[in-house]
Structure formats: C-alpha cells, structure tokens
Image 1 (cartoon, one colour):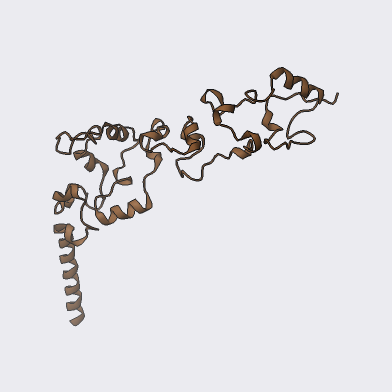
Image 2: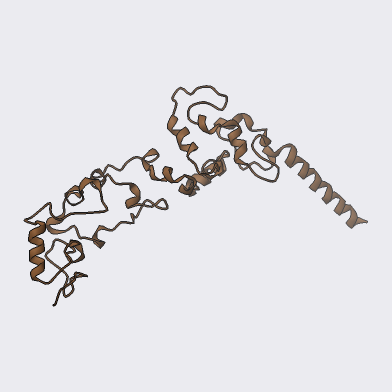
Length: 244
C-alpha cells in the first residue's frame, strides 16, 4: 500500500510538471531571456516554437519577410537607416535556415556567437564569391595590390592560413620582391610573364635555351624558382632537353 501511494504521488508530480511545461514554458524550460527585439513574446513561446519540433524557419519568415529584412520592421514600418544589402544577402541564401545564424535567447545566442554556427554553404554560388558584401577588404600592403577574387587564396572554411603559398611556385627573394602587377598583368593572377624586366625578350630567351638543348622555355618558373641565382640541375625541374 505504501509503495502504491509513493508511485501515485510520483506520477501526479510528473503530470503537474508536464502541464506546467506547456502552460508556462517561459518559466519552466526557457534557456534564457529573449533578445530585446522579441521581448514582447516572452510569455508566448509558441509564437516561434512548435511542440516537440523546435523552431522552424517558416515561423521566423512569417514575421521577418526575407525581401524586407534590413528595410522594414516586422510590423511593416520603414527603418530610418534602411539596409537593402541585408535583404539582398538573405534572398541569396540557398536555403532559409534562420537558426544557423540567429539565436533569440540570450544564453543560446552567446553560445552560438562563440562557436560560430554560420556556414558559407548556406549561400548560393554567386553569394559565396561576393565576399566584400559581408567582409571588409583587408588594407595591408599585399591585399592593396591584389584585385583577384578572395577564393584565389582563401577558403570559406577558414580565412587563415591562406591556402596559397607563393614560394611553392616562385620565391619572392633577391630582386624579385616586386609588386604583383609586375609579373601578373591584366589583374589575372592565374598567369604571369617574366618579360617585364631585365633584358628578356622572347627571341633572346628562345635562342639562349636552344643553345642548351632546352625546348620548353615558356614556363620559366619550372626551372627558375627564385631570384637568388639558384636554378634547377639536369632536367632543370622539368625543362625538356634535346640531346639529339
């Protein structure tokens, strides 16, 4: 009899707790206070949450129209400092996953800011190439020279370290510590020329290499890897020799 009474009391407590969770969820299970913009929803959890299914993005979009973000409030009033770029950014998302970037409860928001849940995979292909739409352009001496797309050196997984290692192709040492445009003309960093300096001309280079029996002289850095006077030996790092 005593055991039965204990079980009944325990079950009654569980029922009461379950009811309180649904009646007063903001007091029972809220992970923290809401952000200021959603303060009026403090006692109306189901304005954003579905029972047992979290917060679907459709609930967010119901108030925050994608094409109006940054230009109008959720009530439809124009913003004094309209930001059309924000609307354009959100419209370019490959899928609407609001919680991937935004958190409404202060506790969760702090956690997400520290760990950075945003993934560039949310952007469409064009959006991933428009880095300057969100990121300020670096102002250091190197980046002031570069006009190529950020993806030439960086990935969307991590900004640093950059994936491009110039020394892998050509060491910028000795007299070759030059501006990018000296070798990469027309803002095309996928190609280069060595004929902008010295006494080099295609005819002279062709004649000099022919004397050595080298037929492939178009790719200079295949043999000449830096400006310190060192070169390849034998096959010259892939240079073809004509021994006939």
